[in-house]
Image 1 (cartoon, helix red, strand yellow):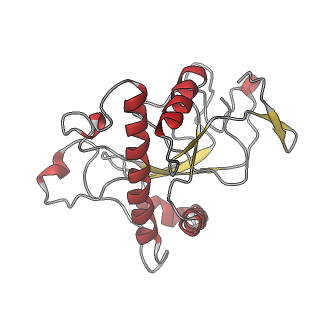
Image 2 (cartoon, rainbow, N blue to C red):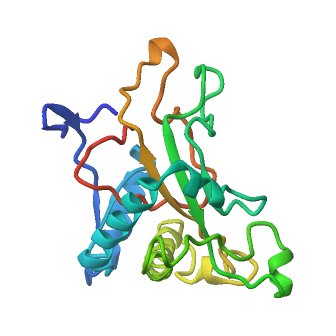
Image 3 (cartoon, rainbow, N blue to C red):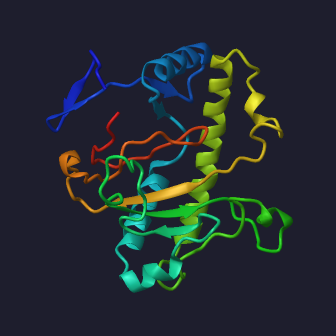
Length: 227
């Protein structure tokens, strides 16, 4: 992304994106910053979002534990038709026109937990999750469910700011006929470390546009997002 405010992190050009402060009292400033970000690049930082640092760190720890399991254990949790569970290495192809094989990443999907005997479980993208055994990964489910719930709260606050930026009522996206029952998917991603080489069609994640209403991306200290 071309940006006059670009800086370098570890020698890599990095953009200084707008920061949307969810704890700020000046809602108009947040609306203005978000509107500018969406028009200019489509990306922005969300700060003071209310998700504790301890929980964020635990999610990354638990994620590394899962992806570090033997393949035989991970294959027991292979993704199903409800898009819950593990996606293997090279399974996803995001840029079929340029990639010679799938992304060099593994993933794991969870969503809102809906019991199998609940009528809503028959809807696309709703149903029970696939969970690793407590004996193998203790606290894994509790950690992911807590993070899933708190991330949904953040998404709802951001959606209200987006509504105001569109000159709509703040609760427009909360309406049952709009996003009253959101399909929130939590995706854990693990990249294998292979350096992307576009000349050979090799990508950690191929070029793409997300298809949901909004994507909240939590990252660790390793820069990797390219806009």
